[in-house]
Image (cartoon, rainbow, N blue to C red; front, side, top):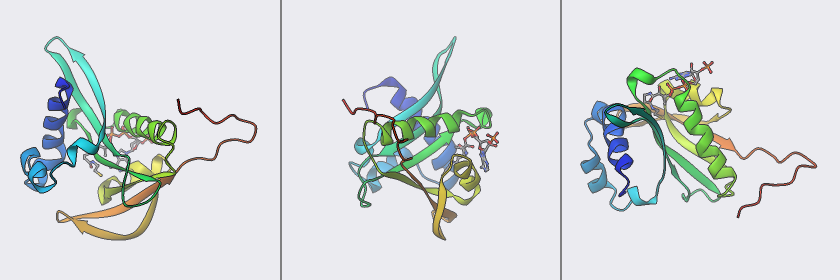
Length: 158
Ligand SMILES: CC(C)(COP(=O)(O)OP(=O)(O)OC[C@H]1O[C@@H](n2cnc3c(N)ncnc32)[C@H](O)[C@@H]1OP(=O)(O)O)[C@@H](O)C(=O)NCCC(=O)NCCS
């Protein structure tokens, strides 16, 4: 939270995800007190003459009410930088952390219907029926930890 990149990540989330649904970071914090502190934050950063810019982010909630599964949330890439593979790299980073060091069995997210194809390209699968959140159609998307190849040593967690 004290990291200066956090403020920049919040502005990106506001621009890409929250403003379109009439929400702000402040309102989000009031609605879900203490929630923000539970996330692990993944950010894509570029360095410009004006300083560092956050151009993409993804949040990982390691503990959810689904045992062994973490939740990927607030996935956003700056509008001008979409389609360059930044979102894909953020998800892969979050998966590596989740299935490596955290030892989770799987991840799920509530994807806007328009982004389902993005997750499918990464091997995530739709689960259940479409539902509405913030007036937007969503699907639950899920990926399970890939099996460790026979003969391959599991990655140690220390
Ligand atoms: C959805 C989003 C996170 C994707 O990030 P991105 O950096 O633009 O995506 P990438 O460039 O990494 O795309 C990876 C692949 O997914 C595809 N893809 C990207 N967005 C897609 C979408 N909405 N639907 C279908 N496929 C998509 C790309 O074409 C690319 O395919 P390729 O490997 O065959 O070229 C980003 O576009 C975004 O922030 N959108 C607005 C907010 C949003 O919808 N967030 C998700 C909320 S659940």
